[in-house]
Image 1: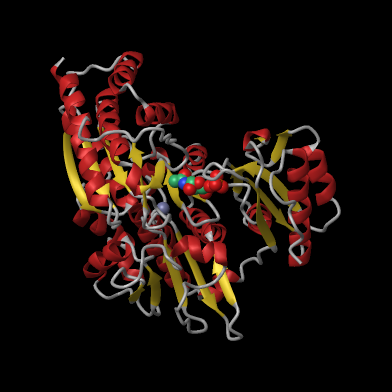
Image 2: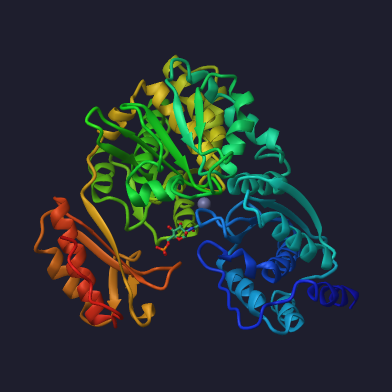
Length: 536
Ligand code: 16G
Ligand code: ZN
């Protein structure tokens, strides 16, 4: 077939380096940008097949998120703007590593019974990395080699591309598939709440998020005062800045002086994560991570639903890393349903789809809110009902605005930021008051090197280990030694290590517990190198 000849011809221009193995994992493909050209071309082919298979537009985002500037990667986006179905991740890995490209390609076509005469459409976007232009061209080459149509959105955040894909496949029902459409939808409604809101400083991680906040400013009509730093004009992408740095280091971006009491937030390199922070009058740093954000959003939504008299259930989906205090507060004080999902955005997103209104967040700051179709309908009907009292009307309109400001396809730093700012403004709440809703339990995360991390197998959303034998019993007995303690171990999905998490009533206890559990992992799960040392 002519199509395959074209693939063969083009693939010579995108040769696979010998001996290189890539893996399409939780967050797509990611490695040093030097080794990715062939994989990008091939993912262009795969996106085209996926488009033919789903008869819908598929997205390809070229980014390595919070990784260093030298890396790059790619995320594939399914028709409703969600991450590509796990069943296809395996094809992505196979295709990226194939020595005989055509055989693997034909195999996928046969297995999925893909009609090759079906039209294909692929949306492509890229972040600000220096390698992104070249690599997104390789994706476009892959699409055209299989006769697919493509639309290159150029520089966009990851969540913006997710949004475009959903708009396109819902024929505009979700919004207009342009950047202008995105900004108008998000800013519509919320801007009127920002009066009197004090300055917010935004760390753009020297990446795409900074560019896009600047682009959005005209839509905000100065109601929200944003001061951008790490806007990419000088610093290096994700270097000593950004959401991942701030969360992991528990400190502000390097070289940035904070004023006590003011609000700050950091995006990651492709603007799908956000964390907030401030310093108090003693100069102490306070982080408001994904757990605090989920609490703020779910509390706000629950109160509005009650005021509106709508019988819709609010749930929060977290992972095992959620601070125990947040779970306790949500379940016992707020009385919202809390679910725990496995680490990785797609697992949280999937779990959230089961509820009327579900807020999902990873502690690292990736999250959003999902509304079921029925919930959206009820809210819109109520907002238009002329026979309701003022309190109900106000609540219904606020809920409607929330649906617009939230990017329901994936965690979105810009959209989350606007929603958080609106909540704080509406409630007249300072960042300190938000932080004081509950106090985080001291915690510690450690890494342990083992010969094969698959020696650890988990269940119950990664909270319990089923192998190696004796592992969970040991963790349980160590946890029992401390107050308010919890600990779990899981193999990392992104690094060749086992992760250990521990929390307890004091930092000393959390550190001691994390160390003892690390030792148990080292001894029971085939630790390599030096034995873990105590932290103090
Ligand atoms: C990936 C995930 C992130 C998760 C992290 C865990 C996506 C888009 N990204 O970056 O959500 O928190 O992996 O890494 O799903 P780990 O398995 O090494 O702990
Ligand atoms: Zn990211």
